[in-house]
Image 1 (cartoon, rainbow, N blue to C red):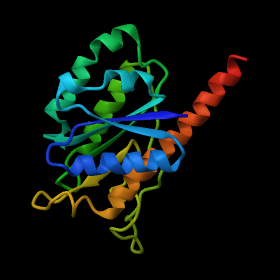
Image 2 (spheres, rainbow, N blue to C red; image 1 turned 180 degrees about the horizontal axis):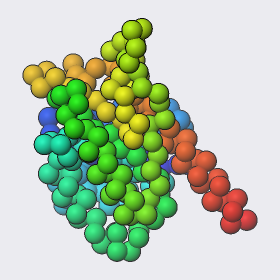
Image 3 (cartoon, one colour; image 1 turned 180 degrees about the vertical axis):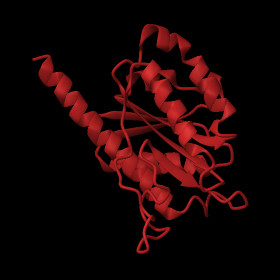
Image 4 (cartoon, helix red, strand yellow; image 1 turned 135 degrees about the vertical axis):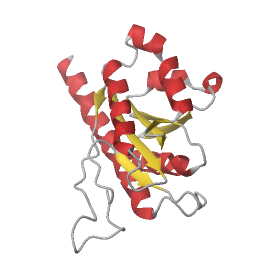
Length: 195
């Protein structure tokens, strides 16, 4: 069975809601999803990350970049980087901020560069932008118009039970499904190449 790990940090619970949506999408595609919180480095399940066919990274956007705890996780992966332990795994990312823009693209770029340094292959969101015409709405998938990964917006004064909105949760779910399906195709291709 395809294994997909979701390595994420959530400061106030909103990004965790997205991580759960990503996991639901992975499972909808018939793969196994494992949530790997990274806030406490001593508790990071490095074995799950090593065994995964794909790793989907998630972080809130704080001050235009990944959160401090997520950056600590990135830095703590240096031994894996030195051994190229994640070489040729698939990778993807998602982020959330209180602002509509919030410089979230920079967070996804940081994750994609991190994955590239590990020799991973980045999977984009694969959805056309939504909510960008007179007939669009806030209910559209990819309503924030991202290509590199899933973006979400959560009102700062609302509980994670209420925000991010359903459209952003569904977008995150589609990212999980896309990565799981891509990991299945990737594994079959590698297996056929070794026959």
